[in-house]
Image (cartoon, rainbow, N blue to C red; front, side, top):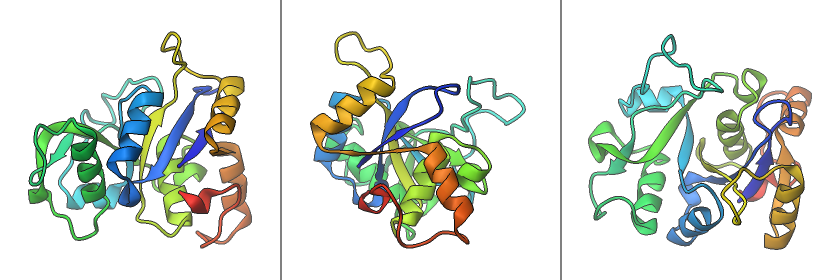
Length: 202
């Protein structure tokens, strides 16, 4: 798990990001406790197409602040109860990252929101969705990253850079900025097995 900060002139927010294929119920509970609790998962478009998960609205209709490409929500079809518990959401996230999963393995709607990453990752769109996919691939995991915005526990407001750095230090987590990830990718030919700033420990 890693704290990913974006540009202060963009969202000026930080997300907790973790490889979906490694996530556990304890990880989901940590996300629920320390973030907005609205857990999404950045995924490649080719995988979402295979799983038959269309966009919630068309690109032309999308007027969300950052044009985030939300798809329909899902739950795992088997092995869960209502879909909202930490155990249920962890199962759904792991299943979304499973290359053997098919469209029939999911119910729609559900409690996990996949996000469609842009081709080219952060080099195309420097957002948390693309950072999640890029870092999972860099870490040698399936290209599906669970992500959730970090909030201040006192009032639920969005945590900014000073609070994010303090949060990471308090919980022993590493930080990376999307700008650093962009620079790393620009300096390397494609995805590499080793990443800087702890991305390989997703």
